[in-house]
Length: 565
Image 1 (cartoon, rainbow, N blue to C red):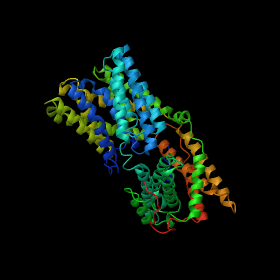
Image 2 (cartoon, rainbow, N blue to C red):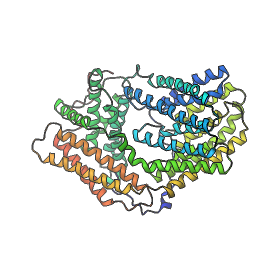
Image 3 (cartoon, rainbow, N blue to C red):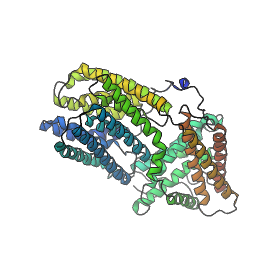
């Protein structure tokens, strides 16, 4: 983790950097799953409409089909619930848009409603951590529907099409469950082990500050794995699998706290053993396992944070989304563009955790969309040869978008843009040059107006207060762990629970500090307190690991539990 947090006094110009914004990353481990799911969910409804000669209705079926993009990282029981809520949320936003479109054709009113919907979708998706792709797909559908002429009598039929496609998307999302019922939780555990191994391997090769990104990535992977595992049943046949995976994630936590005592190759071997459907590796002796699971039980006993408390801190981002989307749409209307929802969606796609990340997304969006407009010029002549080719081109671009977007957002946008332009032609072919011009102008307008609204009009001045609160929470968690360390015989599982609570507090502190460092115009951040809290907290973590005498090199290598998926 970084030992210093930049202050808000850093020059904004200095933060408007292009370094690394367009750099390609390694593809996601499961990049092909959302890509294939998207095609499987979109193709049957579109081909059916093609056969019936009603491609003009494809927008409504795509509203439901695109729900298949969500929840690929969640266990199947949790995925079933999440996908159901996504489908309901998609239909709800579509219903509001269609009713509004049937009641008024005033473009200003339509843009305003679209901006408010975008803000609600952004806040709820961020608060519930639904994503990727988060709010962008929901906003794209609801914003586009606002500008499609409607009558009240047509709305039930259009919503029924979306609901039917949504049910199909739910089935597509759940289809892998019989084949690999434990796939998502095994992948999440393997990622935590690999991230911890990377930090343990780097530790000792330089100053501790040099390995801050690796340590932060390790803790982020561990904290991402826990919600996945805690979503699994606590009783029944799947409980044994869950407990075996929990022990491995605890080992990853221990490795991050005591990297010098860790064998990175063992962690990697455990992660490798989780691929496929083989047995889950054993981790150590029974007493250690008992303490670890008591610590996990303590986390389970904690009451979940209510939704309204999770939405509260997102108020600045929601306000940025509402205002930025509205201004972008109004600017597009002022320029006489026929599809202001393109500018609105561009603005909605920009807003990230802070302004620095929002700037990066703005650059990626503009580059990807403009490159996508050029790709559309190359594809359009082929797509215009027949409606079947139009549908097939859209499916190919759909697959490409999901396959490439994990490399970098701009690369996925290169496919998303021509796909969106081709979808507008389902109801009839349009002039290619006009579509290209309108999309390019709306992209630039949406990105520029949306970013300026976030940077100048709506600022997040509470970021510093949240850093103070995160430091206080980390200090309290450290003091609790230190008190238990001072006891000769703490209650069973108490020290483990305190250690895990401290790890969570330090992860939250780093995320909060990084987020606040990317904001402008706020007061100076408490750099020294953040540094001291992190250093003392990690020392206490290491001491707790030593006290429990839990070492990643205990046990018998890569022995496996007799647990089958």
